[in-house]
Image 1 (cartoon, rainbow, N blue to C red):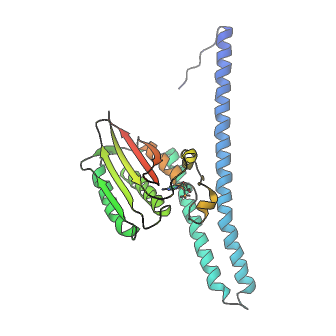
Image 2: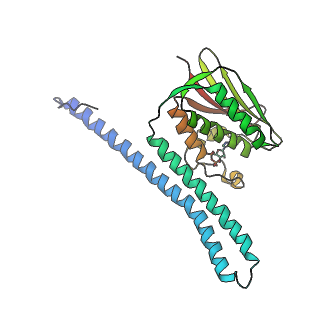
Length: 252
Ligand code: ADP
C-alpha cells in the first residue's frame, strides 16, 4: 500500500502531480487494452455465429425442396459451434489465469514431461515426437498448468510443421538454469513477430495461418501460465529452420 504524505515544498507538489499523471496514463492504457480485448473477442465470436445462422437459414429455406443441402450445412454448423466452444474455453482460461493465485509445489518435471511425451507420441502420428529428457529434474510449479503449457506448444508444433518433419521435446539443466524446449522444423516465426505472437488474438500473417485452425489465444495463455509458474519463455529460430520455444527456470 502506498503511503500518502502531505507535500510541503513546490518540488514535492510537482513530483506528486507527475506521479498522479503517470498513474492516470497507466490506468488509461489498461482500459484501452481491455476494450481492445473485448472488441477482438466479440469479433472472433461473431464469425462462427454468422456462419451458424447462415446455414440454419439455408436449411429452413431450401431443406425441404433440396434435402441434399442439409448434411453439408449441418456439418458446417457442427464445425463452427465447435470452434466457438474452443474459443470460449480459451477466453475462460485467460480470465482465470489473470486472477489465479496458485499453489506451487515440488514437481518431478522429468517424470511429467516424459509421461506427457509418451502419451502424445501416438496421437501425433505419422509425425514423430522425439524425447530428449534428462532425469531427476525438479522445479516448484503447478502440474496441471505445466501440462497445459506443454500440450499447447506441442499442438502448435504439430499444426505449423509438415507432418513428415519431427518435433523434439527436451528437458535439460545446467548449474544456472532448467530448460524445457519444444522444437519443430516448420516455417518458423519471423524475428519481428516473435514478441507479438504472445499477444491475444495475434496470428503470423493471416493468409498463412488462415488455412490452419486457431484463434491466436494459445500462446497468450502459455505466456500467462509460464509466468504463474515463475519461469520465462522465449522463441529462437531452430536449425536448419523452424521454431524453438524455450521455457527457463533460473536456479538460485
Ligand atoms: P493459434 O490459435 O493461431 O495457433 P497461438 O497463440 O498458439 O494461436 O499462436 C499465435 C501464432 O503464432 C499462430 O497463429 C502462428 O502464426 C504462430 N505460431 C505459433 N506456434 C508456431 C510454430 N510452432 N511454428 C510457426 N508458427 C507458430
